[in-house]
Length: 449
Image (cartoon, rainbow, N blue to C red; front, side):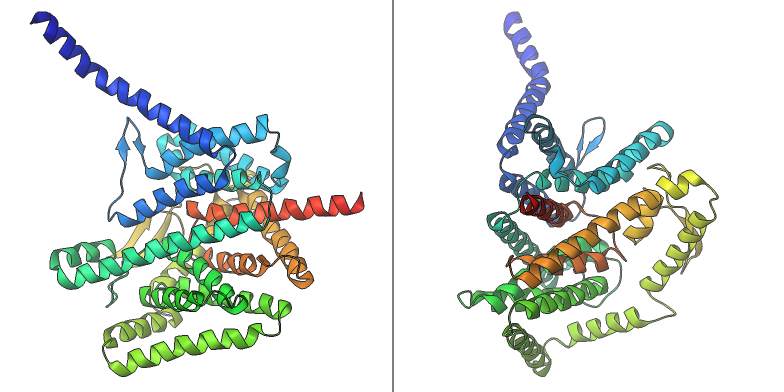
């Protein structure tokens, strides 16, 4: 019995170590599987993101340091990325401006780690996720198959997000406890609950662009008309005003691009718009959605208000942060910003008076000035400008059928970053833009030779 007890005790003591070994083996296997298969990497990313979106609270593992689902994804992605740039020698596939952006930010992370500890890691996480994922995708050749699979994945993610939204709306209608949970999830007080955050809804906007493009260009995809209206209706009902603006801007960009490709695009686009307006008319006439349309009307009015609302408060925060950055009188701050973890101190007025806040500003461009300075901001904007020029050339030459969709994504993302921040699924868009830029550079080199 003594030997049995000793063996049993040893077995129980070994369980944590066995789990760690098993966990490490699983992560290693996943890294190997995605080293040369970007679609598997994107599938893993989609799984983690849908899981995160489906949870009302944040999910984490306490391993001495809190590990979140995206952290697990990065643990898998980083070894695969190192393999591709060192062993496969793909380092030249990544534009210099993206390397500059990454170098400045990791320097600020190290600086912040020495001064602010783990707070620097929390601040740096979203920047690193997007940088790493986009850099990894840039090491793959841009072609039609590459973009096609990415568009399919975006549509799958967006559909899953919409299903989560409709499930939450349905449960809120029949379960009062669940309704109260959703009220705590969204504290804006809109009549029809925002059951999905703005980040996931931007992915829905991306899928909306893809569906509209297919509806206009491809007669063999009649379901594209249905999915276009489905995604548009969900975006409208969710009442994120910034997503409305991003969607409209991207849609205008898509229409412009398609008008350069085909003369039939305009009429088909009008057909989709007419179908959507008809859906709204039928809904309003039935008077079963009065609460929704009243809520949408209130949100639109608040968005146009110059005296109240969240947008007015955000502008005040932007002005204060810009004032502090301009008057910092520091060459280092102007050049590369401040270390991660140093906060974004500013004062905000509300119902309870004026209070000090430190969270990220609702503006990625201002955040980039604070966490990268003019060097990072110029590198970032140069990448967008370079992508814009490449896309316009491809659209006018009609050599890339997917260029109009990517152009819409580009325009939508530029608008989205005015009120919002980075989220790691955006690595998909940045990865497409980076690989597109390098593909054009390689094409010009081949043409000259």
